[in-house]
Length: 547
Image 1 (spheres, helix red, strand yellow):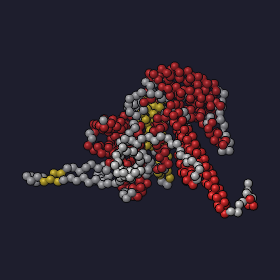
Image 2: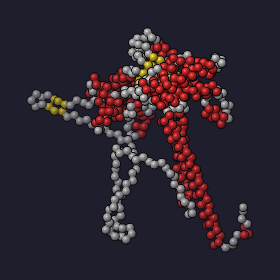
Image 3: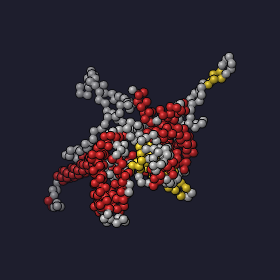
Image 4: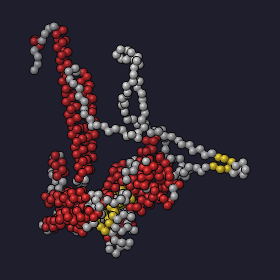
């Protein structure tokens, strides 16, 4: 409602007072609006944080409920990152608006309690001297009562240094023989790079998926110019030196009673194009059935997906193989195979995924919200997912128990569920056309039913091949950074380094620290004791030494 100009006073003093009061009200309104925006942003960030915590707790308690669980957590973390930044920005804006007003109380966000900084981090004390005289009366007779410490986390930019190994020469006065200590070991003959630098370059390339050209650019900005060819030379030398460790790791993995196997695509540079090569992984992880052997993984590279590759990788292996229905594995399951047959154990996660795609409620809701036509959602697929999830629920309860305990629970609870699932599938399959997508998903299981039901008789068998898929996750993420392998030899080097890095991570070992120590010690280490340098032994020895 507009004010009547005739009703306004003519006194300048009164008008100034009214203008000041109006500006104060405007400042207060702006401050209150800014506080409201800050509170809203804080509430949205809090909701996102709680959603993320709920999903993480569900995943921890119940395990990955579906193949979408990990993607959902990643999405929630990204959403929380944006909302937290927005909330802090709005909070600072509210502080500026409140400073202009005099009648509006300030707003401060309630942040989650910060965890204390690790005790092993070095502390630097900066003493802020107190006043030499009393701030009240000016007296100089002050007595110290104590001190308050405010800790601030800081980082020191990476520092480069040159280590000079000085080897003194001595000449014998009696026989004129000159003696001198041997030169320090370098991975590359007459090399110049220390083990920590070599480990950093290798781990950045294979563990963090940073190509050497990007590393060289970053080092140049820090004042250290290293040519790309020189860095590549160092990487090749590291791979040659670490090959015996890979052989020890390989022997450990293929000594397992049960293996997980899988493969993924790896683009490789060819003439004027890229070919699609393959990276294979075999994972030993005995923890689901309370095994004491450390987990580990070995990777291999091949130019194609021929069945000869897994047959060559597993030529000396006899045991249980958990994998998908790739036809290249068939010869491995031959009862007359030497040194012995491999027992096939199918992956229920692969089978469930085929039904899940046809019953993805979230995908349909998303398409509907975007104005797109919802895809057909099959009630049969939804029912199959529900029945398979009941089997998964039992597995979460027995994860980490002894094989005999797992088998007993499966015989009592899971077996009736599996029998009923098979009968239901056969009844429904008889009603469907062979071209129906649900029929194809059902056939995938029924044609391999003995392999799917094998977990009921053997407590060592897992019902999924997720351990191998987790091992390949790094390659899937890295493809976005390095785009393709430069050659077949490059793919083979990458496979060996992936084996070392992934195995270190599986044992909660810092891969870069471990590689640096191995490169430092391997020249003088006896070949008969190379197993002592494997990640789990290295970690155990380090902890024992620290204790």
